[in-house]
Image 1: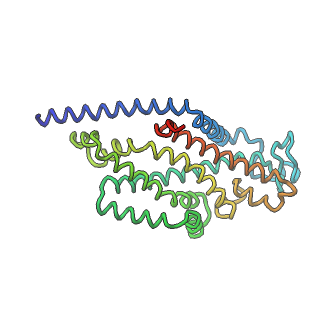
Image 2: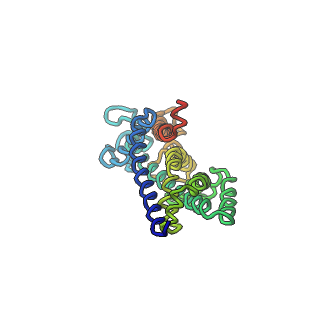
Length: 302
């Protein structure tokens, strides 16, 4: 067969793969919407996202300014979640705290995914000494407990939103690197990757358009589950004073500030705690549902 004929066959195979990928994406979306667990998780997460996105409209009061009402006013018609020791509306602070938590979690998860994904992609696609070097660095990072690493980073860099994002993202890099590397090792020898090489696609194009695109499903599931962990991490750092700084509202900070008078005004602890639980449960259920919907073996088991 001539070189031109070979290129035509290769281009046809790549085109078929791309068409199949789009059809699979539509099928995956349909499966997710028809999976009860994934749908419930999606509803919980979307409700949290919508409330946080429209915080300036939904929140009845400014979350920072004190003396909107009397100190420790119990939940009622005017203040549905009550007030805190400064007379601030707890409902408004919970809503704005959710917005801050989601922004930090989203940035941390994306940063960890991009950094870990690039490392895993390069390690799996290039192989040999580069693979060994990257994996040894990943082993070192993974050997350090995530809480210890996060505390070390924030203690060294100081409190602040971007420092918290980096501190939360860094411990998540090894997991994404190993996951992407494993998927790349499985995908890189497929026929459509060979066909892409045959039509002249460069290494970067092949890694992004062929290898990474066909390795994204497990990464998506881990990302969704990772949101719950980052919400807990952000709340934990804020609880010990290394996360969001006062007077900005933060769920973890609200728990820390209210724990000394929980017997007097329990609502100042209950509602931020319920908000954290809502977010974590929502993302975990969504992640489990995505795994059930995207993994045929899990569907067979269930």
